[in-house]
Amino acid sequence: MDRYSRQTRFAGIGSEGQKKLLASRVLIVGCGALGSSLADTLARAGVGYLRLVDRDFVDLSNLQRQVLYDEADVAARLPKAIAAADKLKRINSTIAIEPHVADVDPSNVLGFADGVDLILDGLDNFETRFLLNDVALERSIPYIYAGVVGSFAQMMTVIPGQTACLRCLIDGVPEPGTTATCDTAGVIAPAIQVITALQSTVALQLLTGQPELVRPRLTIVDVWEGTFREMDLTSLKERGGCPTCSGGRRDFLHGEAASKSLVLCGRNSVQVAPSEKRRLDLNDLEQRLKPLGAVSANPFLVRFQPTGEDLEVTIFRDGRAIIQGTEDLIAAKALYTRYLGN
Image (cartoon, rainbow, N blue to C red; front, side):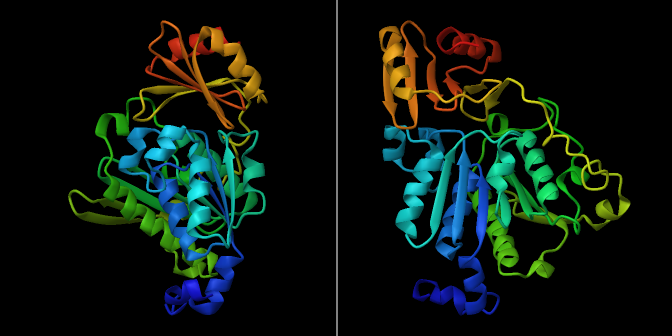
C-alpha cells in the first residue's frame, strides 16, 4: 500500500477505500484523448483491473493531447490499446491490464462489459455512446459519459435505476453536420484534462462505494472562456418517457449487424468494417499484398499503400481497415473491396 500512501491519507478514500479500488474492475472504451487520460489516472490510483478497448492505431496528430503515447508508438504503428497497455504496465506493474484491439459493437459489447464495476466513455461518436448507455442499463453498471470538442467539454454519470440516462438527455444520434466536431472546431488538451479529471473523481467515488456523492447533473466546461456550468438532470428522470430507461428499449444494443463505415474525426480517414467478424491471417495477408504495393506489418496489423494510390490502408486482424487520405466513404469502400473483398 506504500505507493498509495498520499491517496490513502485523503479522508475521502482512506485505506478501506484503497482496498476497494484494488478490487475494482473498469472498462474503458476508447483509448484516445479521453481514454488514455482516464486509464493513466486510474492505473496510478490503483484500480486493480483495467480492460481497454480501442479500434485505432497511434498517429502523429494524436500526440498533442493523448497522454500515454509518444513518437516511438507512432513509428511502430502500434494499436492504441496495445501501446496504452504497455505504458500502463510500466506505470503500475501490480494491476491487471487487458487490452483489446477491436471496434465495439452490439456483437461484442456485452462480453467486454462482463464482470466490470464501471464503464468509462473515451469515445468520439454518439452511436457507440448510446450502445454503452444501453449496456449500462441492461447490466446495471454505472456509466460515465464525456465528450470534448474545441475548448468545450461535458460529462454526466448514469447510475441505472437512480439517475437520468444519456437518452433522457439526447434523444438520438445527431444528424451529420448538425454538431461541431474536432474536424471543424479542433480540440485542445486542457479541455480533455479538465473533463477527465472530473470523470476520474466520480469514478473514484463510485469504486470506493460512495454513490451518494455523485449528483445527477450534466457538467459543462469551456476552458478557453473559463466557464463552468451544471444542469440538474433530476427532472429528466422524473418526467419519464425515455425509450431506454423508462421504456426498457435497447435500440442500439439490439441493432442488427450491418456493414459499417465512418469518417474518423480529425484524421482524414475512413474506417470500413465487414458485416461479419473475420479472423485474418496477417502473415498470409502481408505476403498476398506485397506484389501490389508497399507493405509493412507488426503482430497487430498490416499497413499497405497500393502502387499508384495516394491512400494508405491499415488492416486489423478482425477484418477492419482504416483508409487514410480520404473522407469519401464510397472511395474507401471501393478500395477495401478491391484488396480485401466484400
